[in-house]
Length: 227
Image (cartoon, rainbow, N blue to C red):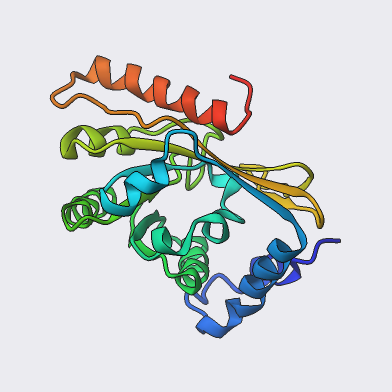
C-alpha cells in the first residue's frame, strides 16, 4: 500500500466528469511535499544547465513514468518560468491541476490531439524566454520512445534540448502502460541533468529521425534505462 491513495482514487471517477475542483488534488501535492522531506534528494547537473535555464529559454524532456516528483525536484525559480506540454485528455487535466500547485504553467496538446496548437503556443512561450517541458513518450507511449515534437521545436527555435531524469533508489511501479514510478519512503531521489543538445535548423526528415534516436538515447542514459 502506498501513501498515494488519492492518486489511485482518481481512476474511479466517472468518465463523464472531466474537471474536478482544484482542492481535490491538494492531498496528492501535500503527500509529494511530505515524502520529499523524508527522503534524501540529489541534483546532478554537471553541465550547469539549471543556471543556463535561469536566464535562457530551453526545452526539457522527461519520461512519462518519472513525473511523480519532477515538479517537486525542480528549483522554484525554474518552476516559475516553465510551461509543460500536457495532454488535453481527462488524465492530462489531473496533471495540470497538480503542477499548478508547484507554479508550473500548462500548454494543452499532444501528438494525437491539439498538437499544432500546442506547438504554436510553445513557440510563443520560448520567444518570451520561458522554458518548455515535454514528456516525449506520452500520453500513451510507446514507453521510452522519443516523439518528434521536441526535435522539431528545438530546430525551429534554435534552443537546446536538456534531458532530465528523476530516478529513485526504490519505488512502486503502477500497472499502467508506462510503469509509472512512485518512490518508497526513505528512498534516494536523484535528479539527473544531461548535456544540452542543439538540433541544427533546416534538417531533413531523415536527419530528424536520427536526432530523434540520439535524444532518446541520451535521455535513456540519464534515466539509467537500457537501450
